[in-house]
Image (cartoon, rainbow, N blue to C red; front, side):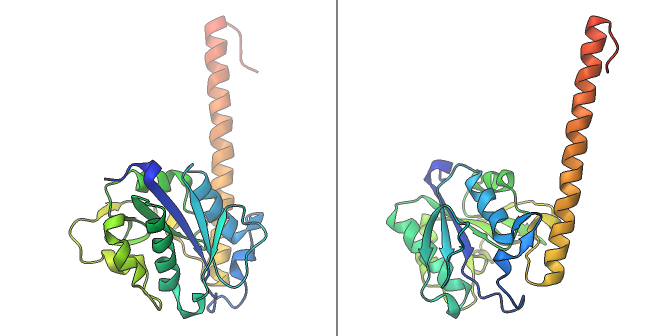
Length: 217
């Protein structure tokens, strides 16, 4: 079992966005570029992060970058590149996540990193991405090509740890409609977070008032 310190996170941001019809990772989403949500979630874990880029590199990517010269051939080539880089760094495991999944949190990635590898989020009780791949499977990842991703390597295996996530967390933005849904969910989450913070402040104020006999403001 890999320790979290042995894990390299690869954020796959080299897709062509054919279904979206534009540079979707640069599209505004909740006040920042869509792809920045996934990058910040990865960096928020404190683990080393590498961004797998295609022909262009977004100016808001502020971590290590590796360009995939074969990005046009499909997602599998980006996974293969990430696995090769992880192997060269002697990483114990590779955590693969997608740049177009803005609702995946740092907390979820850390839960995945702490699971016994191989591990993956549960998509209808089947392994999907984000996924944690141990070094023993890097060779299989490096052989990938076309649109075959890391989840294909895990399906059918009996040793995969499935990590539950809320369905909305796994939203993959492939269309303008999905982008609008992501923005809506992010807005609702921010409102909920502000309300939770306000409720916590009122509760603390009431407790202080009860202790000193005064009334809370």
